[in-house]
Amino acid sequence: MREIDEIYTQCPFYGARRILAALKKEGQLLNIKKIRRLVKLMGIEAIYPKPGLSKRDKVHEIYPYLLKNLTINQPNQVWATDITYIPMSRGFLYLVAIIDVCSRFILGYCLSNSLSGHFCMDCLQSALKNWGKPAILNSDQGSQFTSNNFAQILKNESIKISMDSKGRALDNIFIERFWRTLKYEYIYLTAFENGLEPEKGLNGFVQFYNYGRKHQSLGYLTPANVYLDKKQPALKSTKHQTNDHALVSR
Image (cartoon, rainbow, N blue to C red; front, side):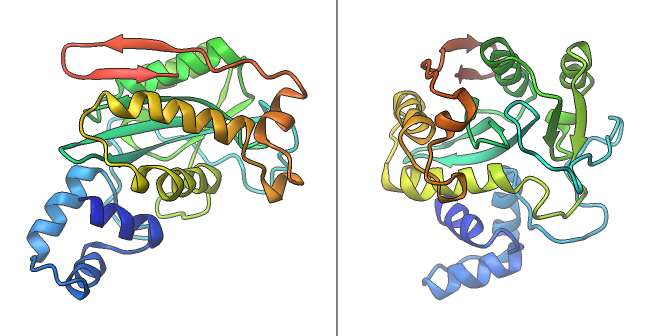
């Protein structure tokens, strides 16, 4: 699954067959059934227009995409959120994060060993508590974000809900770029032995990304320079424990 994740991060438009072909070039003796099973377990799918393969819950309401032709030039104008897979030496975790689109500032993240929606709601509530609220929050159509409980948090705060169109690679591009940076500059260089190790390491990387890593697209300023305008508080930390999964959010 780690090798699949590296291939998918490099080429998110690859489906199971192309991933299988890439693995075979590396000498892996696998079959398409196993690749499809692992891709489903990881919660990923190729980015391209296709019918009926979205991971959304058909019972949940789907909201329109609101960012088309929108000029985003203010912090807290638009936040974006997404989930990615984090490989470890033994097992794996899921990571959700929220980013301020204008500044690229990471407002919070949360780790979980399951894809239930609770860790996404915890991450959202923590970000709202620590950083205020956006005018719009954009996500994909995953069931964690289309759930009534997640949507109700946004509605209670009068936040407009925006969702990517199915198969759209660029709708949520800013957080996809963060995933790529996180994985190539940290995750793939670190062999996590258990679910406790990513907690401290991820916090350190996010602090560096927010306060130390200069972005060419921001005029070589850090996300904190743009988002906080010289005010740089540390990310606040909260821990969550549930019956079915352990969560760590910031």
